[in-house]
Length: 163
Image (cartoon, rainbow, N blue to C red; front, side):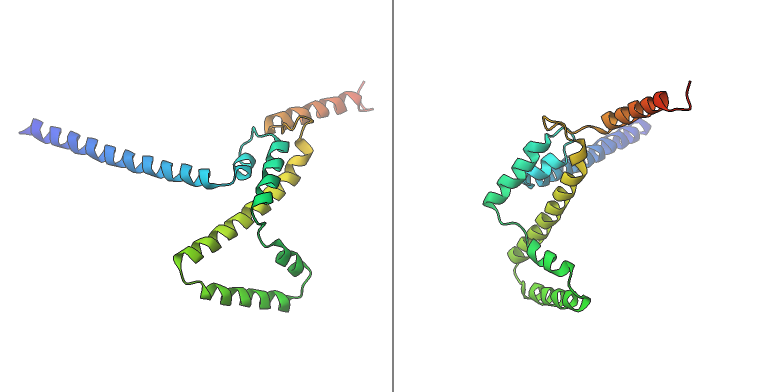
């Protein structure tokens, strides 16, 4: 009787493990699917081994075919008064209330996500520019630290206080 109880517990444990592992596998597939739906320039920006010039070209090529998200409104609002910004936000809320179908909501979310990715990419371009080599290779953080350490050593050797 005691052995049968142990066997039942082991089998139950195995089944729970298999169902749990299957759930994790499904979640991993979903994450991969979402990553695959991103434009290639977003994927390149997230890859530390990417070539800077290739990523910028992919970004530019993407927007030769697709519409750039509404940045002109943002640029107009940058210098605008608080009242103008409030009016714009109120108008956007009214427009969003009119969105009734799931497809329209999905398209709105996709536009907002694309707008966010464009901002991220432009920020990434500015941050990486100082670390881009002639061939487009971006210095890794380890390479940056090594260069900094070499510069520090050089400064110590060349400082007037040293003999």
